[in-house]
Amino acid sequence: MKYKAALYMRLSKDDGQSESVGISAQRRILTAYSKEHGFEIEDEYIDDGFSGTNFERPAFKRMIKDIEQKRINLVLTKDLSRLGRNYIAAGEYTEIYFPGKGVRYIAVSDGYDSASPNDDIAPFRHVVNEMYARDISRKIRSSLYARMKDGVYIGNFAPYGYEKSPDDKGRLIIDHAVFEAVRAIFSLAANGCTTRSIAEFLNESKTLCPLVYRCQKYGLDIRNYTSFKNRGWTSSTIRKIIRNEVYIGNTVQHKTVKPSFKLKTSLINPSGDWIRVEGTHEAIIDRETFIQAQNSLSQPKHGNGHRL
Image (cartoon, rainbow, N blue to C red; front, side, top):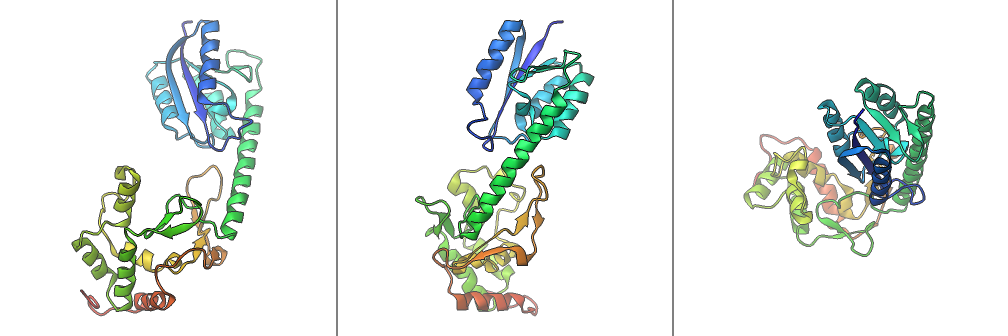
């Protein structure tokens, strides 16, 4: 049989330095193996920076599409863990999907070859690989929890009105480009203005909403965000800012929790389980104004309330 090989390479930031093999090293191993065995390399598929616990990876999905189109009939990886660290999903591919599509699978360093009738190592390797991923996930969660208890900010992006300190990414500093907009929001709310009227005022004054400002500041593609169609200020955005203690110098985290390291979705944590550390950074709003804005937010408005 003439084999058209797919070289699949993956590297995750969660992989320890002693375990992970760089993309270039994986390519050398797979290319040499293909040449030695006379396999024609059809294409390379690289997921650099993607966890093995989730199979929704762009290059992996492209490879599956090419399998469906019968472009390839051989998949090579450096080892079984490069394919994935979710033993159920990995097992479905090695035991069901690949055989069903007539695709031979080889994990070079593990000595696994699906063409060998007596090779039963894969299921056990998949379990071991997931145990490794589970252990890494547990250690990461423990480390993040400890940092949150110390008041270290661990979010990917700073809240609107702040930015991460260039000297310490876990500490927030005031973003002088937009902090006046935050003060205006709290001042207007404290004086009885509705969240709707505040949003309208900011939109009319051409003030960039948090999402658009973030994308412009960091050079992000706004189309990657599910809410990109709404590019202006809304009542819900204003309400979210007014309720955030970050603006009086407190860091409140651990509001959500993932039920499993295999899932992307998060669940809302009960407020009693949140981690609140006071005085972690410079406040934008004084406590009195913050309380007044909270009280105004909770009071029912007649008609449109105070408008600008």
